[in-house]
Length: 112
Length: 111
Image (cartoon, rainbow over all chains, first blue to last red; front, top):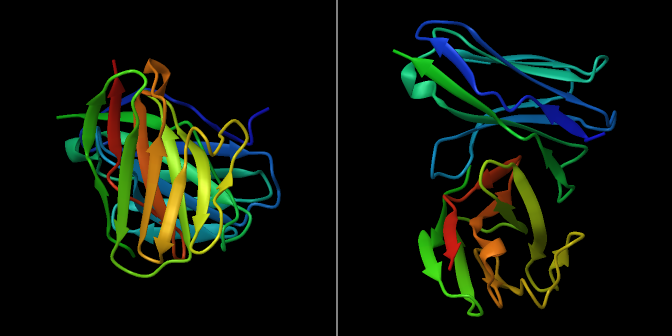
């Protein structure tokens, strides 16, 4: 079993839709949870960063962490064609050089 | 946050040669990381590079194939040696502040 599972998609939605991206994980020691957005031919860009459980909102993006279920989500409201990218979840047990584990990434297409 | 640049952005190399990738950060950082991202795949950590010490390599990666230098707190290089077509990939430099930030990547094609 992989430490982090993420559906690779692709996920295709119409413009304006609410998008839900998810990851599950197996290591209960993970405390730091990140979402990265990666456009084609670019490096990953940090979108959201949360510590432990709960929700975090930033504009159209909301990150949720449910540690009891070992499940994290990223919601995108009012999706735009410019949101079309690959979204990678990532998590680590600690900062300070501890290994970050990445999901496989979900490819998202938002159709105009 | 951190601003990270990589050189070259892309290259095409012949089998058996080597490519050295440079990573420059706009602030001093303790930890720098090198990742490989093969087409359609997620990120695989190659090694962790601390200034003033030998890099720590992940399982499946060895220093002879992927020598790393870390001469100061803002710079690192990764060399991919004795290139084969299987080395065709994107190579990413990353640093850790409160979380990890990535450079734009170096796209390598080996013929």
